[in-house]
Amino acid sequence: MLQSGKSPVLNAMEPIVSHMFEDHFEKTGVLKCACERCQADILALALNHLPPRYTSTQAGEAYVKALFQEPQLQSDILRELASAVQVIEQNPSHAYE
Ligand SMILES: [Zn+2]
Image (cartoon, rainbow, N blue to C red; front, side, top):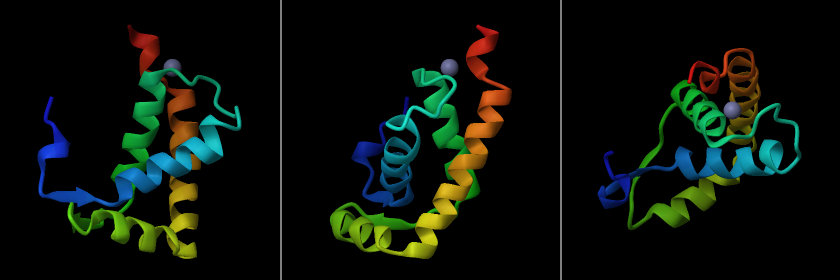
């Protein structure tokens, strides 16, 4: 596994998408399956559909906070998360183990 924590750049979308996933899907109990595998698949799928926003890790926290204030970005992320949840629920990779 590559360890992204050592990288000098950060895709600011990752913490934002994962935070929004927790708040809007994981904690609300709307997921058919909340196993780690499905959650990781949903996050990966949503992130693949969203343009990355790279920042240096030093400026990272402020950048993430600022990005997180953008209503347009939040609605894009929610839309991608909702469609990723549907795709993974219909075709969960945990089913093939
Ligand atoms: Zn699962």
